[in-house]
Length: 236
Image 1 (cartoon, helix red, strand yellow):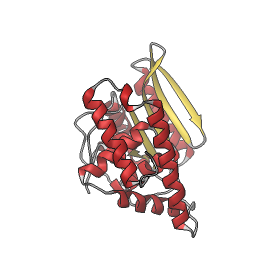
Image 2 (cartoon, one colour):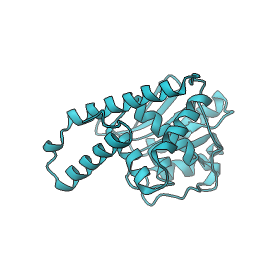
Image 3 (cartoon, helix red, strand yellow):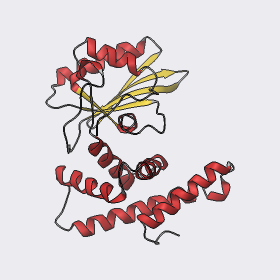
Image 4 (cartoon, rainbow, N blue to C red):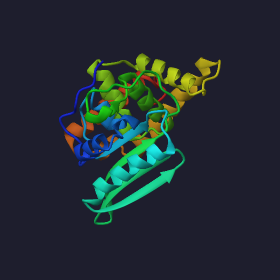
């Protein structure tokens, strides 16, 4: 599956990409996250860019990338750079709020080669398989409402099904050195984690408290879909 430029871009994305390309730094990053996914299936907007370092990349090259991004964002307001673990986030602050961030991390696993040619300067896009594997991992580990929506909408679109999601999740764990020989138990634990996350999301926002009728119906369909396809009736 080949990526295409989304019709809606996070603010300042083009400016950041052009600056990276002109500085000869584009080949050091690959776009992932929600914005990366929008290159294959565009159904929601995002205000941030999440990316991975394309290895091998030196500390000097990483510094060049963050310096270029800082210079771009500083034209529009205050800039904050945060680092934790293997992640660096360059953020634009306006009126004491973060209005845009460009976050880059070291990846723990990669299933397929990144794709270039969509953006200038060899800025890459993650493969659909890697994006889906990352999204399924987020659904298991984090279970935010957007994780449920993304997996649900992707499966409804026909681009994948729930078994594809599980298969890629297992492949990513294997590539990251996290898998055990007992794949059945691993999937069962992950399934229970998703069901627990679903229950938490549902308790935080019960169906009956959603005023908008269309939104309420969508939420009910989503929760019923996960109850049937993942939780197998465990979740009411």
